[in-house]
Image (cartoon, rainbow, N blue to C red; front, side):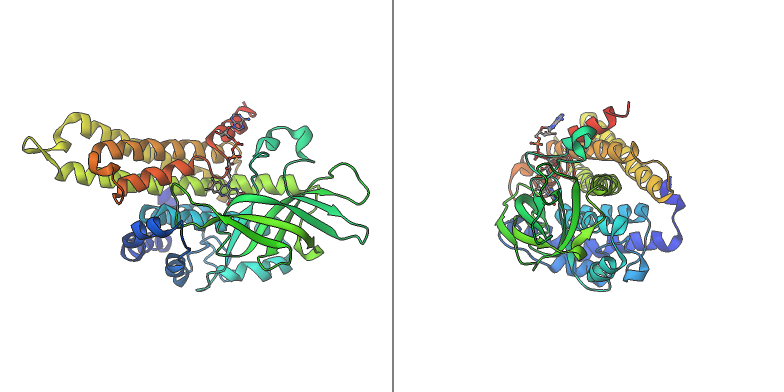
Length: 392
Ligand SMILES: Cc1cc2nc3c(=O)[nH]c(=O)nc-3n(C[C@H](O)[C@H](O)[C@H](O)COP(=O)(O)OP(=O)(O)OC[C@H]3O[C@@H](n4cnc5c(N)ncnc54)[C@H](O)[C@@H]3O)c2cc1C
């Protein structure tokens, strides 16, 4: 339905991406999965960068394609159908640049946004959601405006903002050229925090360092690490907005980006469904394909229906953002519907593929592991339910 609203050129680009991914990324996906926890391999990102697909919605004035959020989601689905780990690296990059797009200065945009355009692979990372702090603060407006990050920024006597703290599980950290993060800000002489300051930092900023690389169950292409802030001096040119605006910027970026995680869910679910369908038609049981058992074909029908519903919810969320409509319901709904679909479809695919699916190296078990993580990143499903419940 929403697909019919896009231009012929955008449709062609989506099909081009499908073909590109099938030829140059999908064949490497199992290798990325095997080695992704050990080292970061930039080859898939280079393939996408060659075609200016690392940030499909980046405006043309920064060298981007300037695609709508709807077409960007379609492209993410295509990438995820080849390898969800690659697609989530692109989605994390989109989240990292969103504070710049929403509230960055012209100087900040000119400095960071062209890094990922026209063949360059200068990705961004985003360190926002903390273990222990999580997103609960968004639900409790009384305390939100002041507390919400384990990374602290305190103004010293020389009027400099000194940042200290750590953030775990930062996707793209090892590959990124810059990072956006959120600091609980305290002004000089104050005993209480005075807001949440969003900052953007080049990865070589003194005081910013990487900690352990995390070995993950799935989405292994996307290198994920701890980051540490040790007496880092945040200069005025690092600041995005003010401490009073931090919460609103953060929220807007989350709402704008969570449908992209939904698009990654749709991509991995589609790949799992297609794999199961294919195997069910090939695998013979008592001299007929297992697909002919209605228990199996009905399960596939349910998977296809759920996939369609998930895609529509993601497209509607993106459409609302593109059209300037309210997206505070549709964005969390897209995350919930698409991540439930991805978990259910990858689970059923494993059942249909059978015993071989449980063995390392089979695509079905990778899909299942990749899908699980998608229900947690960018706010867990439960968190998004809380966001929606607060609006009922
Ligand atoms: C592989 C990986 C990559 C990540 N990448 C990034 C990244 O690039 N940038 C970034 O900023 N963050 C990143 N994260 C962090 C991620 O967004 C958080 O893990 C996620 O938001 C959940 O927070 P938590 O792990 O602290 O869970 P917790 O907050 O400890 O929650 C534990 C469980 O309790 C539930 N829960 C919590 N509060 C409530 C509530 N009020 N009501 C009902 N249920 C609740 C949660 O849904 C969850 O099921 C990543 C995490 C992982 C594991």
